[in-house]
Length: 291
Image 1 (cartoon, rainbow, N blue to C red):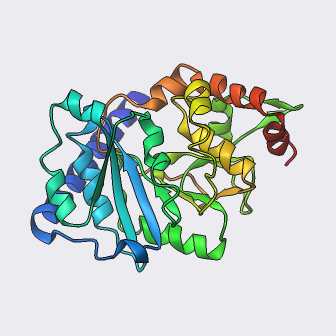
Image 2 (tube, rainbow, N blue to C red):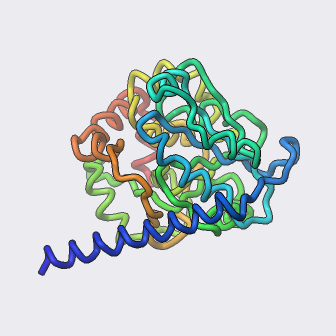
């Protein structure tokens, strides 16, 4: 029975993703929505990065971000490295279409992996919302997170995240955070809530202050876990975080390929990388466990 349920769920998800792709193709070829704004008037910056293995499927995420129904003016910025463009062989042809419709493309020399989505955009004078490159973001995605930012300014906001658990002043394994966070919810903001970038994270101005100065550290301590380093910086900058819904929301994945989840969670690297941050800064550790 368990196998049958899994099979049915898999078929349903595949059909759902297929339907989303049909809708996004209609948007791309027929609706062709543009982002009407001037850079100076942006209320928020939506930023994402990608790498060569996802260039073919990146268009699905970009189109979903172009279609956001929101009263807020936003800039949409994609950061790519020269290294990934070279590995792919060229820039994806569809990017020129998105650029004509308002996408801003930033090509950088240094490949900072997933950190690129914030590293080059957090000091542009507007709050930042980060997105992943393999997710479908529904029409309400940006509007809802911006509405929540008005209710609780200067708070990190996320659709998805985990509460960092400790027992007798010892941090529990990451998988325990995941299990507990699926069933529990705090309405108030906390230092011990870790936003995960998959479904989008809102960062107020100055919350990621120090990111550029800490490049050497994050590349050494947690090169594959930007969520952890962003958490470290926001706590250092005295910004708490909260989830905007009672349940974790994981929006549809448009590309079934390798991901950091497999490396960080499946191979236990999250626990190793997070422990390195604690060992580096005991003040951060105390803020987390004292809640």
